Length: 256
Image (cartoon, rainbow, N blue to C red; front, side):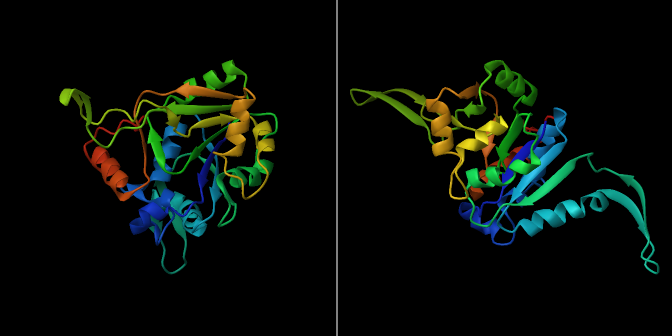
């Protein structure tokens, strides 16, 4: 099964980092968050990836073109230009990098990589800016058992502020940063049938709008509840948080 990663957005809310590189290439612990996401999938045996490029896609291309050498011990003969590889730490991944347009919406990016998918095999999909300690194997089984076109991982995001419960001007309970407002949101980490791409009209279609709305209204969208760690990287605050977790040596998403 292949994993598709949307990596073409501008990442305007992280402009401190994304002026020179796309958001999926912003580093956590010295590695792009894109690498962390791929390592999560690889832990469950997923080693084929399709990465949808857009904004500064050349940066991602250069990263993977040079990945093997950058993760290897090598000897360079500066006279002949010959390079001997002694040992490599490169993962055994097959990565397809597809230019899906600078201004294409998320649904349009998926539509554009349809030719790289097996029409008879479901595929995984997520965004290039979020990590989780999700059990991909269990997610796939849940999707297959549900026999629907699409499965979305439902998460409850961490709250940013402490919550007060008040009765008659008296605080009856205080909860430090509760999980969201009680509602589940899409945490990415989808499993999709190629047939779901039929719900996408074109480049201007956002996957999160009409396609998901139609799939839900037709009973073709299943929810996989993930109650463990999940964190997106939308802002510098989020990046700082993830960097701190990684530095602590207790990164929950580090399943490998």
